[in-house]
Length: 183
Image (tube, rainbow, N blue to C red):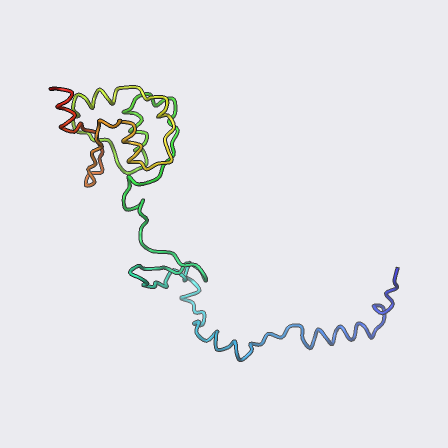
């Protein structure tokens, strides 16, 4: 085991103290870097009290507004496709056992979508459809859009009708199919 006699001497501690005093806690800005820090405003009471001052910077690039949320992070301030078209949200759902018929499945799918099933009286064919039990293959839906899931629950003959003003959806039979069923 090597001997550490040098640490025990006073000259070692004196040299260590002088080294720390000369270069230890100096905080100076090199002239080259002072130019870079001049572009940032000095901290004031107004900017210090803001919860997130980076969100104040808005940039307009290529037809869209961008918000700077961090030092190196910007986000687009335009709503997403799903936020603009609520039925285009991608879902993956496993229907619970309590959901037994198509009407309750439609209500379950529309639960958090912002849409509701229409309160208007439905045609007799649509009423019959909504009372039918859910096929086992439809217990797990997705990943797909909400609009596609609603269409799959009804089947190909029925057409999904959407009222975007009142945010209601419903089903109808196209005229050509009604003529085939009821000649």
